[in-house]
Image (spheres, rainbow, N blue to C red):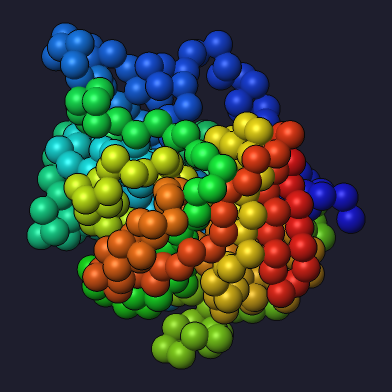
Amino acid sequence: MAENSRYDQRGVSADKGEVHAAVQRLGKGLFPNAFCKILPDVAGADPNYCNLMHADTAGTKTSLAYLYWRETGDLSVWGGIAQDAIVMNLDDMACVGCTDQIVLSSTIGRNKRLIPGEVLKAIIDGTVAFVEKMASLGIRIHLAGGETADVGDIVRTVDVGYTAFARMRRAEVLEIGLQPGDVLVALASFGQATYEDGYNSGMGSNGLTSARHDVLSRAYAEAYPESFDPQTPPELAYSGKYRLTDPSPVAGMDVGQLLLSPTRTYLPAVRDLFTHLLPHLHGLVHCTGGGQTKVLKFAPGLRIVKDNLFPVPQLFDLIQQSSGTPWQEMYKVFNMGHRLEVYLPADYAEEVIQIAERYGIAARVAGRVEAASQAEVRLETPQGVFVYT
């Protein structure tokens, strides 16, 4: 099977090559190697400040939430979808040091015939609940309303997205500059942080098209054709064996809950990292699209060796066993156990671990940075050694 062949046939990709090519004329902002685009201070016209604006969505995780809600009537899954879309924005911005005083606006497109007002209310209530939780931890997020549109002609069920804006001092921006000799401290995507209400499977908001179709039963294609692209080859539409309410490998969670586990935010821990370790930080990488290869984009002339990864969480084992996806591809599509990487000199690694663990987030030195002739990621895993360039 050619790499990513099933993903291409489903209309998705791990590296978004065509998207990056399409937007290259937009420019890279003040800090070309930062994790998100940063612009001059248009809002305040102060040369010492800059503006950050970022937009993202929960992706096709909304289709999974739609299935679960239709099957069980559980509206609470929509609050998780709100968190998914918000965190995909905020944790990207956190990688450059933006962890407070953030303005947030929503854009929700729905098919009114399928998505009633009670679902919209659950999404908005979930937004408010997340903002209130962050406020209790000293992180201020301001809700600026947004747009809710009935666009059934172009949205099959519902699309949930947010746009975030912030203003910060240029001198406090962290632009990624990894150095040979740095170590990589990985912060787990799974477990239960002190500010989470239950076990987090580590799913995040990437790879859901694959996970949904590879794990779930063909019965969902027949019952809910609106939940997927009709041009998907029939043999790839819901080709797994599980029902949403089947028991999962994690006690107390069914398969649907495991897949829908809300994306963890690292904001509280990252805020503390910047407070205590900013002079020593050489880069933070949010392992979203591209999974464990995400850092390739930021590592010219460097080899990132990851030889002490977390054991693969049960969720990703389930996906791999259901799909038969080669492990090399799994590590490229999914975060596989950690979604945030902190790069800095080895002398400060233990302090990063302690900060994460104060919030109940497991952390470990997972690898190191070496000089190389080109950007390369080398994964040394129980399933084999995988090299990506």
